[in-house]
Image (tube, rainbow, N blue to C red; front, side):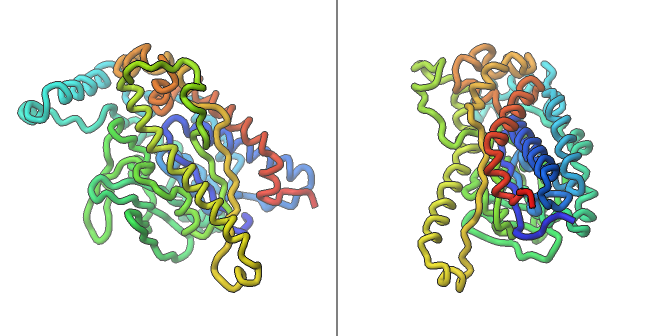
Length: 401
């Protein structure tokens, strides 16, 4: 049976194809644990994460991990195999006809204006069609296993987040092994529900790029949802609400990006649409996590100033965080792989101009579901986690007896 105390949470953040980095980190954690067992550490078998939460592409990884919680090493290897063999057509339709047709509709909308668009009945739902993702989820995430795994104690809770275009609220959908009251905060709430592939499609629907997904909401209506990273002011909160006492956070971008003038290949010309879109997506996917981590560390520091006896008499507890995030700029890595994008998508994003600088590579970094890129991110994640090997061992208490 898996360890149950203290409850360990895992947060996998959003970022489209950037989520390949998370897989490399998970591979390293699995290896570190195997080595600790070989060295004599008394470690319970099974899944080291009792509470698993995810957003966007991180929600897909989180759900896949939860659905294989009875064999952590095997499920991590399976997820790694999928990410290591990725092709864009597994996520979105990359043929010229569908991509260019969608792009043409958007360009006509921008050029003709709302009146002409309505007159011509042009109503594009998104830049790209992500219907192939539904088929991948059927193979990668066997959600029918989850209730049994929870009943057997392999995992306590799974949560995925999405953003409602209908209500403007940030919603965390969760499935748990024990009765648990949903929580409500300003502009964010939770809904206890059976997690489905539709929830994963909604959580990973990058705004403008992929279409919204309809999901049922209590007390009996439907709302349309997009990527859970939108309006996500407290990414770590779900794991805390679900009972995690310590949390591993795996990011999809550096916590502190270098200033633009320190980065190569930047220029002072007017920004391209790819630059603007990449900047917007980075603000959606990356900024909130760094702020949330900083806030929690300040709270931990403040709690440390309170005498232990006074803290013991309250419900206040410091939260143990292990943060693993990229040591390199992922947009720079993506810029080296832009040519791997499907030709029609590359043309739609501006051709060679997409890779003209780091900002242009930012947009590509979310759409490069291609193995050369995902494998490099996995290798980076693995290397970064291995550099924190001692910290990982201390965090989990994986020390020889």
